[in-house]
Image (tube, rainbow, N blue to C red):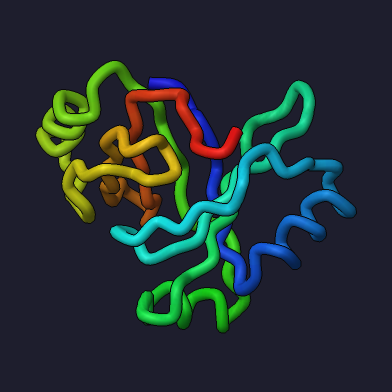
Amino acid sequence: MVIDHICFAVKNLTEGIAYWHDIFGYDQMTDIIQNSLQKVKVTFLTREESITIKLIEPLEDNTSLVNFVNRGGGFHHLCFRCDDVNQKMRELNEKGLLTLVPPQPGEAFNNNNIAFLLAKYGINIELIDTDEKVGK
């Protein structure tokens, strides 16, 4: 497994994109995609020789994430790319990580499967097995 990206939840993607550009020098890498299953809008940011950043904005009916961004938002999850989401999920479940969202199509990843787990210390983990990102 390798880290693919780090995700931050923001109240407004347009403002978040501008902030990351002005403060940290990141540029928007992908179009804004609406992910209906996770109930978020998503975009990826890039900067030469740095890790990819994903920003998410909750859709109105994503109450828990709306509440989170209304309290200031911030770090949401680490995403690890692996060879096989289903296999890695089983391995991590055996090691004590809890399944939050079983494998399902991720619209921001060209409908390749994604999954979410909860690790120790409250770390939300996303698993993917592709490097495809829609709107790149």
